[in-house]
Length: 327
Image 1: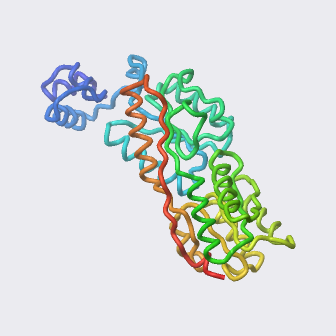
Image 2 (image 1 turned 180 degrees about the vertical axis):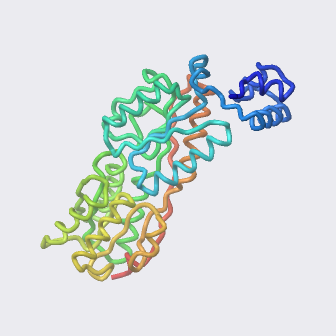
Image 3 (image 1 turned 30 degrees about the horizontal axis):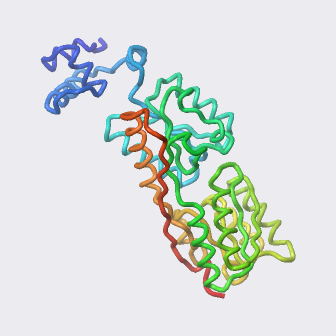
């Protein structure tokens, strides 16, 4: 026989209302909460989440919508969000959009249907331009990519400064013809490209930037084509870890030595980057801090829905390895 909430109340020696408050993370003492949860476990009671959602505006669930869960950056951010959500008694629904605005729209509608408490979103440029948290009916915090000023809370990397750090490092190492492959579906690639170009202008040097889909496959094809050109760069930047991986594959296929023939640097200090070739120079992003900061901003927005949107900008760290050794 399936246990009912009345059975939990009887086992715990409390009222049904008290059990309901505990299950919905309402205000009760810790001692009482432990007592009720022990009764839930002892009786095998399974809360009727669907019915609870119908009685409440929210589900104590947040949505986490990322562009590519294969990207270790988003894997690490997702872990941080889940850890922070668990600490405050919330659950996480994770969705992957593949940088597709149609899938983003589909999952945002799903979040409305699920009556989520809020959403943490890594939007494409198209979605960021038209995002309206008020119309969605729940607060939204953006990660990795920003929207229009004042549109939504956001936590991002200082992308221009990080790209500038990479350029200045390459110039110090003796490289002068610097180019880059940048993701074309989000604001992140554009900001990192702008940072590269601004740093090169300071030294009166040209730059060559090319925009592609932010995948290893697209990066491999793009770099193989670029390497066949007569005036190819002597150093290249990758705007994320997946593009960096594709560039490395292309160099190996073409028999290009790193850094003797071409230097390579990029973003995201993924585990494999220190093991590839001579080790790859990268910008390490504070991925765990990004996830936890986004969750904190979402909770703050729930406490104060009327305040102005905020943008938190975090700094990256340059990790120098052999792929950018001095010429």
